Image (cartoon, rainbow, N blue to C red; front, side, top):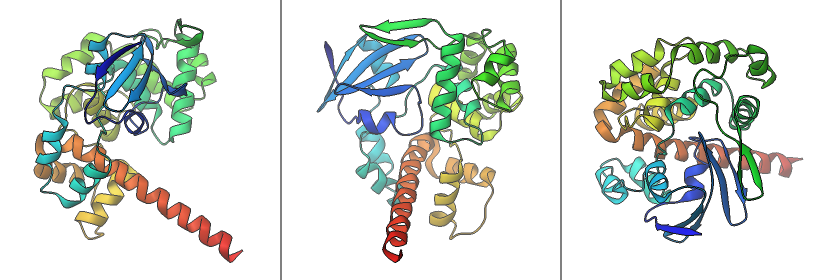
Amino acid sequence: MNTIDAPDFDLRLTLDSGQVFRFRPHLDGFLVNARHRFFYVEQRTDRLAFDGVESDFLVRYFRLDDDHAAMIRALEFDPLVSDAARRFRGLRIVRQDPWECLVTFICSSISNIPKIRMNVESIAASFGDPVRLGAERSWQFPSPGCLDDEGKLRAAKVGFRAKYLLAANERADDAWLDGLRGLPIESARDALMALPGIAEKVADCVLLFSLDFTDAFPVDVWIHRIVQRSYFRNRSVSPARVREWAARRFGPLAGYAESFLYIEARERGSQARRASAKGATASG
């Protein structure tokens, strides 16, 4: 098995941070699907051991060439983000395939992580080619133009999202998506939102997690909640206002700040649910 250096990187935290959904525990690490690739990766302190892909792919995919320490230093001016960055050190933004990312986050609309995982895995099984790594089997993610069967999409239980996936399949391809990289973020966001069913949050996820717009700041319910509470004194503000605020406050590091705030908000939510369940058990 090959190995590479991976300083300031936490594999489990990064995979489980709500960015990617096609991975599963295996042996001492994880089996991961990334478009046409199917690979194994495990963490050995500050190195990664892997099989099934090239080292250059892992460096690009997990953004191991980013100066993580410098980014954390640049965010020290914000106490909440800085504290989260220290506690969740090693969280990286994954550089995904844009088409797979687009389909995945269309599936994320009004959904939850277990259902998103089921949807994208079912889409791959229905439309993708089989792939193997040793004795392990999986499916490649289908290319643009392949999601052309509404019946199969609905069998994958994507529900109302089927019509949006069909529209994306007709109107988006690899070249079009890659062409968005050279645009200003507002223009790239508008181009994605011209696709049926793509709102700001989904567009910003695609920009941040696949197209290198590290100034994108996706606003989901977790981010909206923590920003309103921690920065706006619980005043109600719109998602658009939150994005404008993040752009001014964090600039090109807004996407990194969002990733740490998201993990912080999700952890607080989990702690609150555990405390509530414990209290209910004690009172019962």
